Image (tube, rainbow, N blue to C red):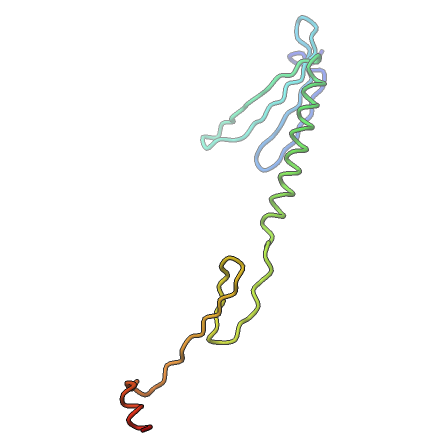
Length: 130
């Protein structure tokens, strides 16, 4: 038996974290998996967290792990689709027009163009015509 009952050990490192997968045997002869996550802290020490899974529970543990991993894959692909634009882009409208949708109807609002001349009252215009 190896150091502290180690039968097998491997590791995986990514983004500043290291995961250790250690298969060990205790004094009673029970075989278990110890999974340890280690990451550096700001004080140049390491933060370590671990879980232990005994051999008789490994099948259920792996089944739950595969289920969780499958869910993560589906959720990740769903997020990618949700960030894509859902509606087609609006068509360009002629200048001075805007469109608002309300209960399935189109409402077209035409903006008045402002003339450079001061506006005249209706009375002044009718006197000129008459």
